[in-house]
Image 1 (cartoon, helix red, strand yellow):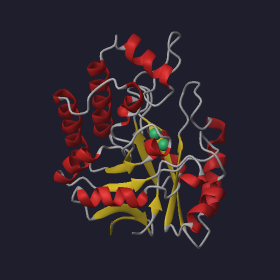
Image 2: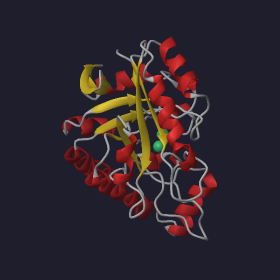
Image 3: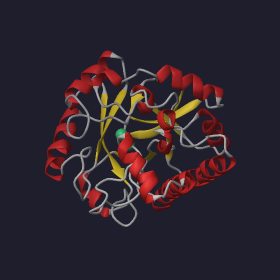
Image 4: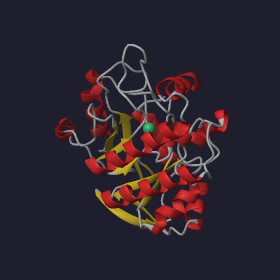
Length: 279
Ligand SMILES: [Zn+2]
Ligand SMILES: [Zn+2]
């Protein structure tokens, strides 16, 4: 399999290691291309995104790395979708000269005085506050809101890769707050794939949850990959690497999962073009 990774964090946001450390590791593993996708600055205090004042330095540093002939390097951002506040479709990203954007839902609402952060991706306690206080313990209400946001993100567009489709399951291994087999869950998780298909974006197969031990599975779960294949949604394998040693860990496992789901190709950026290459 041709190895690539387009979901990569480094010390500009919540990742460890420099962009050069990441490139060196990717070269060591014979990757053909690596794309950087630091968390784009958010308009409020948080502990995972790049600071706005570092954005120019990030763009310059990644752009300089592109001159390296041994591996293709691409400049991207992972942009949060927070309805009414921030979107990959905002025109403010246009001037940066990005090669691509990942669109992701991490946070279900803008923070206020009571709740500084309401992310489905954060620590257990933060997640419990979101579920129990904001959604009064209604798992179904919270999860349906999450998927509706993913659908709205796809509707607004302005990005190339949809980040960790079912991230809302991240805490389910530890907290067991819902059953992935339940009818209502399957219904919302499957119907939102119609929005993904309509948007034409790439659905990433993301093993970041597995790297951290949070999940036993990729995002999206294998049963959803079969549904994605039935809708001809293009896919791409990504580590969601937050350190150089994350690169490549489960690429082969993802490949096998995708072959089982019926996929034979993944869509990647090579030679400056999106292209479908054999798994
Ligand atoms: Zn993310
Ligand atoms: Zn990420």
